[in-house]
Image 1 (cartoon, rainbow, N blue to C red):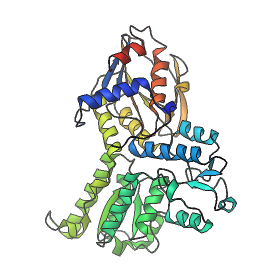
Image 2: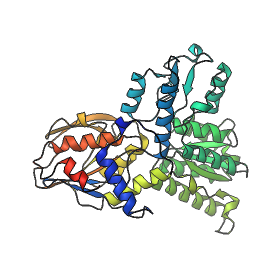
Image 3: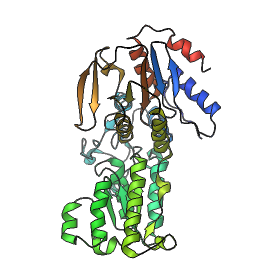
Image 4: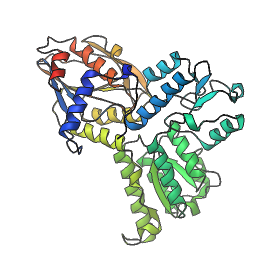
Length: 408
């Protein structure tokens, strides 16, 4: 796989050594067991896969190269480059201005842009309507488009099945940048509707089976279906694609459920199911799959707690925290500074959508076992800083530097 020139500030000597060793020992990526960092009184278990993915590294390389190659020019980001506060802060400090927030609310009016300005499209992609607005200003965004190739793969797959007469069901968070972009691209070719979870897919099934009518559909799925969508017609032949950072297992559960609904309602079997339902499982992102599967392997290790590192508005990181908290106490932090001391930690509650303070988070035992992972938009340097911060609270038998030599 291609390697990218990512600023050294995001790299970690320790994590790089660990990942290189694991890649060397497991070239086919079939071993999802974690890596043990054994400090003696502290034992940290690192997930097999975590941190920057292909799409994130590609976006960061383009963004920083654009800054270096265009001194004196005004450079804008359509919205956050990725969902990581450190990276976006670094770009802001380099003079990059943000046109929108993550929900699409304008921070700077497009009327202020000039043809000679540079606008970088973030890794999530953008809507066709926004592309048209930027083009009408005279901006050439192709060179500065950092849309993840795996997001574009979803768009291409949606276009392919649309050409065969299927409507599209998008599994995604309706307000997320990537979902809005995927919805826009799919809706260009075919009737499209968004479902956020399995419960909403079950609600959609009521329209497939004719148990509810068009008026109810307009109210229940308001703002989440394409113009002119008619549930009595447009749900007769469907395919499912996803926001690539959703839980892969949930996307598959939604697809399997809707497939069964179509088979039952139309009396289909495996031989003729394709008449009504398109197989689209290949739109699941490899990094999402790997990171989530790695957490599944991580959770097989008996531990006291888990720490998940990443941006609080990062969808893929949130899902990693969700997987962990189903099994043991989990603390989701966006930086080492949130670990206040051995007794107190500020961490994000994914259900209340706010930061909370917990006490007595580190158990008083020897050794303490901690599971550790991070999202696809989280720099490895941040993970190492969290390791160093936690290590400060223990009397260690080995230093980080000594452990690093074991992976050389």
